[in-house]
Length: 195
Image 1 (cartoon, rainbow, N blue to C red):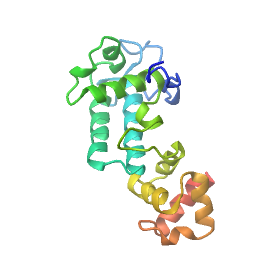
Image 2 (cartoon, helix red, strand yellow):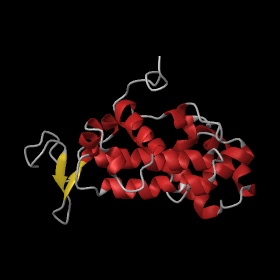
Image 3 (cartoon, one colour):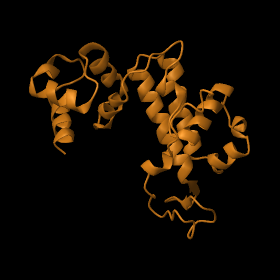
């Protein structure tokens, strides 16, 4: 079994609802999965979904203490892909992902894995430079204004790896000692946890 086959098959599109003006069935767009944005430009739902996964990969790597200069490529790539005029899914099926600017063989493989399975080996298994944290650390970055670096501090220095852990630390008053977390952030955390 190849390492790609060992990834659980999941569709990444299930996490994404149609966006404003989008018709998932393709009735309003010229092609299935496309929509017009507020400026009238054709966009692709699959590109948006992939861009979101690449942003999550960046956060995941930063939280897990991966070299930030290497992780920084993923948000830039996400931005470019979300605005690409052609469906990345179609490009992948045709073996043309390497034609995208700045896409190396490694990045091409990550993109293909995300499209095929909804995840990638780097997030599941890490590599020689990175041992992945628990996936639950991504819950921390869903809190407004709590970025990957603060989430890394919470995880690496305080053992907080989920919203549940964060809520417990908040209730116990342990967040007061965390650099980057003041009263305003504590309130944002409380609002996010309380729903």
